[in-house]
Length: 624
Image 1 (cartoon, rainbow, N blue to C red):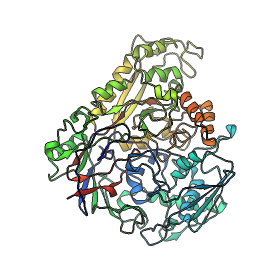
Image 2 (cartoon, rainbow, N blue to C red):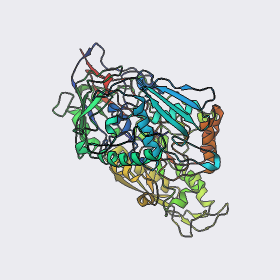
Image 3 (cartoon, rainbow, N blue to C red):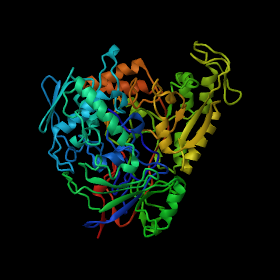
Image 4 (cartoon, rainbow, N blue to C red):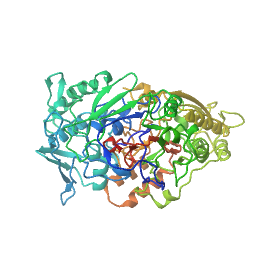
């Protein structure tokens, strides 16, 4: 059900061939037979590194950095998407065989492939049930959870599961009511990552019962809570990741060699017990942290043979050539240093910044559709793309990605264009009771009438808020400054503050009694939303009331009704209706989708990319 927040720049989004999302260029990368062995050094995005290893993320831990680029290297999900730059499930790499449904559409049976854990145990259906039991018991701690909405008959995973049983390699789930089978496979079963029985612990050497308890039983609720308390505490102890007897039990192609929880440096090596279809060629992959793109670029300029050589890196926007779709490597400033620019991967994402509807000061502003429309109209996406990103990007125009190919877009969504009209935005404010003679504008006509400021907005309120954005990238400094300047043209004051990516990620929690800090932030430019592991873009994981990743507390009862129809029926027109309605609802402020300008050493072949921003270094190799 959940998809992941993405960092703004990463070297992961690269490909050695034509991009699947619209890139038509060919790559100057190496050709030739693979060489077994070798070490590859990968540059991490500035001040961004994985900080949670257990594949049961809280809302604050849900990110492509944690999941797609880290956890999935070691722990394979039940269903794997994105291989070879395709918005599609890959059956060969998936742990589960294709689901089989009963005639009444309420029971689904899954055969789990008999892979091996690195400790010699079989991967079984019980390992899958372990994760499902945890999800049932720990809904408040799951970043994947969307609560039921009884008023409209909405139930999501795992609340829509009446029973779950495991026998050998066979998992059987019986649901309360029939559902959209596409949605259930692509958005619900796709969340699941089998967990080894070696993790069924309440403390060091203290065996738990979560994995084997009956689904939904009182015993499971109690035992899983005890497991959760122990495992969640261990999952953020970065200094212990590499040597942990817990996290060293893996079923993926890689295992963790070293991890520095302070700097973010880590290294992975092949899991020799891996049962999957593609064994790694490389001996090791090292992930190198940076605090700014300036220092990363300096290492790249030193050349692929330098003392601090980087084999897979990225060009800062200010140093990138102008995008050439037919030949992305054209104008590469590091060609002489031994690098090539591959065709970019178009991520299956929408980019935006989050606005906190629950913030006591600015939440009332964001709850006014005219206000969020005004803010959106001051974001000059195309100018940001053409200027700051030198053409390496495309606008976000709605709640379903327009690129890459593969998403069901309504006719209206296909025709959507990004708007930029600060004059119209200014007029919107004036027409709703704001004095826009200076910035920030001031509410002079409070009230709930059609020409007034709106509910909760008192006289004298300023049209102003603070937006935090990631530090360490000069292009983002410029982008934030431009958005502030353009908003001021309409009378909207935006204070921009740079923070590390991980700091912003930890800030981004929902406002609840248990999380009062979630009531304080106002706007966060965290990067956007990659549709993984909720691959069918129905919106239940992102925009539904109470959805775990919906940390900005957006809620629209009409939208909730449209969303539930996309999960219970098979008519694509239900998805189109959801897309068309949310186009006028403005739950976030859309920003450009940017394409990473990757630099890869000429002797290294990399895989065809992953539209969900995952790493698959088992497909990388040096050539003869």
